Length: 300
Image 1 (cartoon, helix red, strand yellow):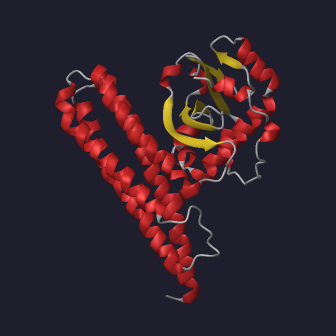
Image 2 (image 1 turned 120 degrees about the horizontal axis):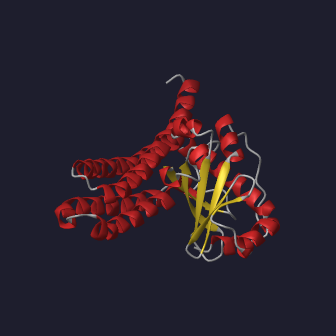
C-alpha cells in the first residue's frame, strides 16, 4: 500500500478540472461526511471528513500529506462522489444503511498503477457512534474504479468491474485453502464459478469491441439504440447467471457454518449485485428511456 506516497507526488493543478454537477441530497450528504482510508506500507490511516487522523496514530508522512495536500484531498473526494453519482448505483441501492448511519461513508483507496492516477476504491458505511470502538462492524457497500486524469469512462466503466470479478474469483480459490474446513468438498462450485467468470470475461470483451465506447444519443437512431441495448443486456445475462451460482454457493456455506470463508463470498456477491443493478438502472434503464422517447415521437 503506497497511496499516501502516490498522492504526495500529485499536484492539484495537474489534474483536469471537474465540471460541477447537480448532486441529489444523499450524494451531497455523503460528500460532506466522506471518510478516507489511505495506506502506507501495511498500515491504513482513517481520515475524518475534516482530515483528522482517527486511527492509528499519525506519522510524519501522513502529517506531510495533510499539511501540503488538503486541496488535493478535497478534489479527490469531489471526484469520488461525482463518479459514484454518474457511474455507479452504490449510494442509491445502499441508501437505507447509509441514511441509518447519518450518511457516513468510508472510501478505502487502493492504488492500481505506479503513477498514482488509477485507484480501486472499496466503500463501507458505519455507525458514527461506534466507528472507532467497533470498527470491525462496518458494512461493505461496494467498489468503484477511478482514473484521476480521466473522469469519463469508456463503455460506462464496466470493463474494470468485470476484470475485478475475475481477479476476485482467483483470490477466492486462494483463500479457500486456508479458510475452509474441507476445501475439496467445494471443488465443483469453484469450477462452475471459474468457468462462468471466464465466459463473462471473454464474451463481454467481444461485445464491447462491437459497441461505441461512448454513446452520443443525439447521433444515434432508434435502431442503433435497440441494438446497443440488446448487447449490453446480453452482458448482464452473464452476470445474472454468475450471481445465481455464487448465491447457491453462499447459501451452502452458511448452512455448513463456514463462517471464516463465507464473508468473502458474500462480498463477491455484493459486487455482482451492484453491477447487475448498474446495468438495470444506468445502462439498460437509460437506453430504454431513450428508445421509448423515440417511439413516443413516432407514435409506434
